[in-house]
Image (tube, rainbow, N blue to C red; front, side, top):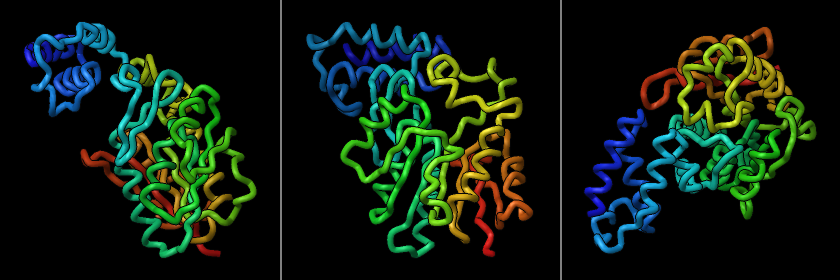
Length: 279
């Protein structure tokens, strides 16, 4: 019976325009029935929980899957998320993967890392977990988001602060090995084209940044230059439509070298990197 219900739910979600209807129908079935997705066949007909249809109705309204389950998965992490915090996206995993490789290549014993606009803490926690001797610092402005961040970083090595990314961590100036950020980067002019899951549920503070979407990134360029040691690296996520634009913010005249764009797993431009020039 449950698999038949899942098939029906998949069709409902597809009709509602949900991008991954089968995945979400199965995830919600597993969530409601307290099993893993691969164990759905083991749920007996008599154990079917009608609350499943409540979760499907919410997803039909394009409420994010992660808000319904309260969980988001990012690399090797399980994060608590909900209203008020940006839900981490799979494409950001490749950004973090590049950053991890870059830090390891530095051959620094205890690399110092700063995550600007940390949101749920996904990036900071992934780096702390996968670069074991790193010292990771993270900043978030929104008190609403920090309710979730604090839950996620509890018991971790991440040094979490509330504040503005543009003037964060002055005590670390010139001593940071890697600065990383997934900042707001959607142009205000693109509001109507944003997926309902993001537009209607993610906080605006985490999405939009001026007419061309690059306002905050321009500010973060100065923050990264202030924080990084010579030879240190900055990694900034951006929209796939902004490929080529972001590296031009990190110019030689402003003290940078090796500015470049990088693709995500779908071969779309996804993040820019640059190295603070040696004096």
